[in-house]
Image 1 (tube, helix red, strand yellow):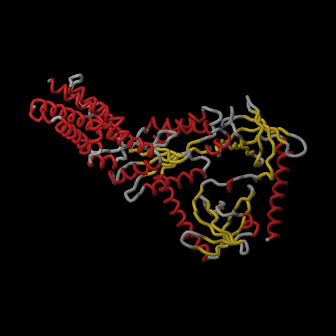
Image 2 (cartoon, rainbow, N blue to C red):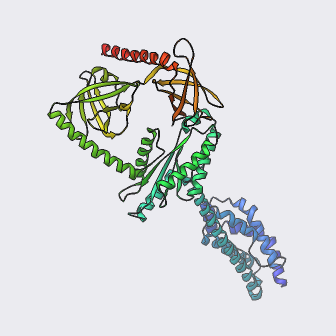
Length: 535
């Protein structure tokens, strides 16, 4: 044991020389160069402590175990992704360096087998401890890195505002379903918030974010895994339990939350229910959903559309269209005309239209100049049939010089503006109107009138509901007059509500409203006639 104490003292006395020989070993220099390790910094930060620990173990001041300084170095080197064989080389080269120095400086210990074996045991024990520590630390580092990767992947797939999946992840979920469940009943619900864009323009970012988060929370509660935020105010989810009924319940729940706040009650949910097909892709499915949502946006009544029902309706419409076009071919052969009505600023403009050409999906007609001049592409036009239903079509293009109009997308309609008993006129400029209900007074603008109805757009409904009795003060001529009416329809449109108010017969209707409508009708017709003269 006295020899071991002496060996410890010798190592302490020659520690600087031992460290220099150790660190400038060609293999050590190669490792340090690879990982850009400074010899001087390693010597001060790690090597001195490693040698001191070795001496403490030799002189039994510390137990044989892995070296703290070496383990700190290992932890440091793990960040540089050092290999296990390189750590082994650093440790074994230290052992060789120490033994070579001792044998050169103190050759007498060559014959002290007991001390040499004790030294070897100390080195091997410490080496085993270092390698064990390296393995454990490597595994821990691997686990932590995997967690970081998972977190980064999670961030790449998550919407930061809501915590829902983002569009990228949702597309992957769709692709997985398409691969794993062919011919299945999985459906996708795409949902958008109608009126949110207008709300966000008038409110702070935080208030807008709160709405998105509240809606996301409702969706996540019902569909925690396979739901996503795929746009600023668009969400989507997929499930085999989706149906028109379950989707409507979800929308009702969202709308109930929105209407509970007066500031957000004009925001409404629109949704499209889409069925996955074998040859679908995530892009084609989402594209179909966008088309369906756009279809709903144009509607004032629909809140949710089922693609299956939509397809069935479209198939029925195509059948109606084919029958109509077939009939029109006979009309053309017999040189018959068709009664066509278009509407300009709510005024009906009727024409006895001549059929010029018929293709697979379109019909070209010649109409009155005043009707042609009033039309724009995508305007609706109505064709009166001998028997109900009448036909609605959309304007594809117009040739003003020839008075030709190409029509498309024909569909039978049971009710239409053709059924109106009275002329409606759109005002040149909206007129101020004061609406009085039981509890509130609402100053708004009057847009369209007939002798039976007022059409007013309001920002808030307050206590107004269907069948609410209203008193309205409006100045149509020189003096302000009072009209009475009952709310017939309430139609949400963007950030407002369209009120269709059925008027009660009062002296003001006959004495003031009827002359006003007649005069406005003449103004509209004169405006069209002026357009004709310009053309």
